[in-house]
Image (cartoon, rainbow, N blue to C red; front, side, top):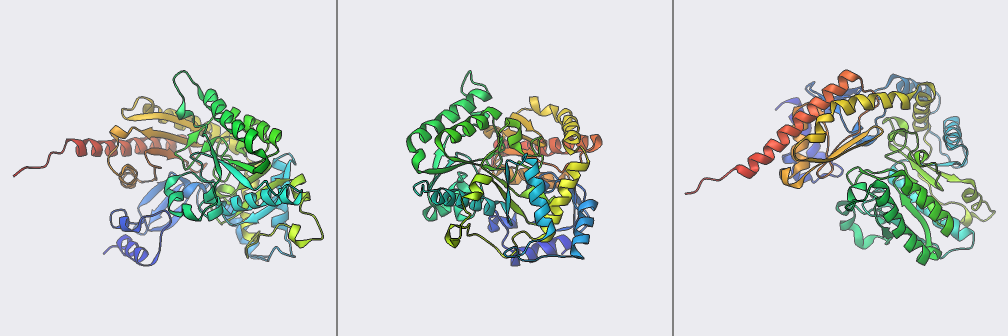
Length: 454
């Protein structure tokens, strides 16, 4: 048994892997990663893999980025952690200040947690508690967008509409109102992306006009519904929902956990629509893929509604590692990179190079809806062209071509680290197309195979 096989067997025997049907690990064993550098992951036997999905969308500047490493080493020598209840520390304060400045001071008072789902839970609780504190306790329901994903804790699942995550736990969940997705793939004949956005916003308006007295907040993923297969929508949708939330006194929660930190071409996706929500949820890329951290930013009028001598009017949420100093320092190093280098400009140039290298996808048989926003690329494989267990087959083929890539259903997507060069873009496109060729050839073989008869 080789090193890889040994670690795979030990992992399956001891670790319950997330979002994994463990029975399938006999066919798709976990990849045993020993080290990482830049965009590359290396297994126990030294084979490299390009981290095409940035390790679930968290790795912004490549693995083991020297600037973040040095920042963490310096923080380790001073203060790894202290509780944030009754204490404070400079990384938490500086990070809150700098993130607020990036919203032009519209949002502030960062509340820290560890992961995206927790940030969503916090925003939902804050919204309800705010309305109760200002004398509107009936506003305790939420609105979410069909195909939306916001995490897998019970509160986050209540506003999630990806069936594979939600259905098993549905009996445990509160039920949110659902409105149409602005996914521009749903265009009717004669519609463009803006028309789809308008139609979706109209359904929201109809709901708010009737039920706004009981609705606390709407939660959206700005510009891209990621777990729904990188469903992209027109910026006008965000503009319409901001106006509707203002009109009907409903909070707008922007879940920027996946799309923030420059992924869509601006630091916050909401910037492209020229709007600010009432809450922003951040996580994933904010620490560059080094440490767990999530953040909720809120408007000052919401924060002020919690100020009182009554403890019960304060916001009641915590965990032991809230505002961990190491995680906050990693996030500050990420912000340093954005402040000191033209990250967004460099990404725009790199994206054009990868666009050119991926141009064959536009006419590739069996492929549809080729799309990009910022540093996210996606395309769908037509059902008739895809083999059974398409995502699994594609993932394994990718490994053979030095790619770590996990499709979402029949949606193949790239969300690479922000370290693309022209040569690396051409290499990545070539390996992706080779993986696609191999996968669709498997589909053809499956359809043409005729078993022998006696």
